[in-house]
Length: 246
Ligand code: UDP
Image (cartoon, rainbow, N blue to C red; front, side, top):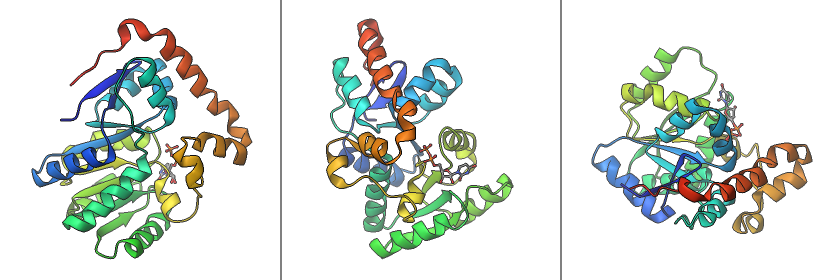
């Protein structure tokens, strides 16, 4: 399995889109389960005060470095994370590969109608993709949700309930589900459905999505203070806290 390193006690996977996608599909073919969580500075900071959250994040199999802050932190600590892997971009890579390898997907989460619209847009982009179904993220009857997914038998399940709800959900139900690959994808269905715009590519390529969001939604500035706080904390924790793991 791909190597990991630890940033302030939270695991982060060292990988690229290519290496990770190849490994994930190998595991689908080997009928092994995988659970992918996206790690960003905000989650790492929350996990400092919340031991349960830290355990939950570390219980995933793959922890993608979603955010330029994680890359800077890794560099500060002499780590090896060189590429950002965003949740939505990995999801799109997985979908593309699923269409190529004839693996099926299922979308669970977001407001009623959103997953359906996202599925329609995905199908337009990848006509070969097998979409086994969708369920919105506000269904109360979990037995029913589990039953519906199991009857559909998808290889891949994207879960968009927001964080940490989606991670708790995956951890709680993965053993009951006949699914190989689970990815928690936050607000990605809203983006795929066209309800939320992503930052333009120029901002994304420079790792400046946060700046774009700050300009568009200035009231988020308080949330964004998490990034400098996080980097200061990483800087002062450099000695002894960085334990590369395999
Ligand atoms: N959501 C859901 N069920 C819930 C709570 C939230 O399906 O009980 C959905 C919500 O509609 C939205 C997504 O989860 O589509 C959360 O998106 P957000 O961008 O807040 O997630 P983040 O990545 O910031 O955790």
